Image (cartoon, rainbow, N blue to C red; front, side, top):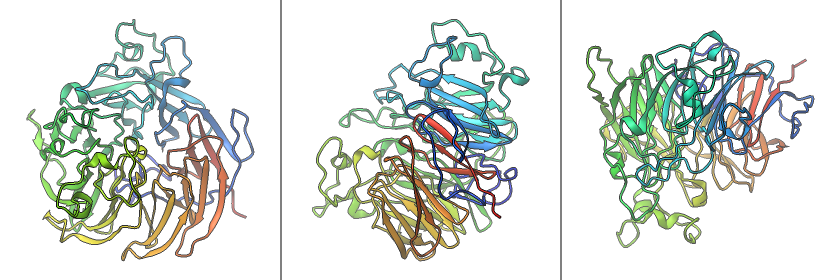
Length: 513
């Protein structure tokens, strides 16, 4: 799959960010600036089709080869062959008609994982599938990496994994009888059991495909009680699998688990710095790491250690240490546990995906939104360095932003990013100078999408904001959504996709005269 050039079929959007650089920009044209959505099955003029989802949906859609893939919760399973477990559900939908092609039921992970409080939130599959050819790769709510046949069981049960009936039925239950509308798992890699790892809350990585290899964040995290030591501090945070077999090829050796703040919910991306390719990873210690791509070593079963090229600490010193020189306690900034004073400075992890663009990398820090909207920071980093480039690699940084979970959009010399507090920021991508800021007064958990001269962003208050892309602020529309929406809008083949909690919408574009 290409970095940010050709490499996708037509105008598909086959992975998180569309391409390996993860820049939230689409070349689609003719997309609507305003439209109307209904709450149920009834279609309105602007809606191509709609599909029922679970009550909590944090996954993002991928569109490739005439199919739409989306993860959600299992509340909408509705099949008597197997009972729901508050687990996950992966959907494969016909792009043109909205017809369900196949589904994969993923059981909730009930064993306690070293005190990490894993898979207890009933949020289902949060990973955006990555589609390449006839294969789709996804991280499940059970911390598994799955390779799936995009055709499901319609063309038979591919191996080596052939026990989908038992997988969907769950432990202690007899296997369900497979049908044409069921998923086909090709191989499965269990990160908890194999590495091992101790993910915190959820696993949500959007798999990066580069050549023959897959790069995956393990979501290794802290104990659910902040005063307890991290369960598996030596576990890897970034692993590499062979895409055809699921074999473990490499892992990082940075011991990030010793320095974790909370969880690890960022996804890897690919950068090109001069003639050099880099695997970028925003970690749970607030540091952005750049690694050389893993070598393919036929004939060996011993996983390699990823070679680090550089690292950049995204938390400034005054976010880590107080005026008295003492380290600032990360948990003092958790608004769900204590009252956090306005303007509180403290460390944060990286949740948004680093975006590579013209030898630079853009990334911001953030937290679980329930921790509140304290100050964050956005960085523009020179990707051509080596070693610890925290001091030497900063092109510019921007502090007038709250914590964010967003991945940036960079288009036509401008950068767009929302924050948890509800502000949408537009900056000059080269200099970091602010062009405009709009306060929506609505919490934002999503990223912007730039497409067709517009900037789209959803909020937690059931609103889609549509801005005109450019240096002058102009609100084109605010579209009322029937349900809260945490996922980012995406566009493919003339259609705008919005995955809200409870319902998924495909909104048709309008032909230009």
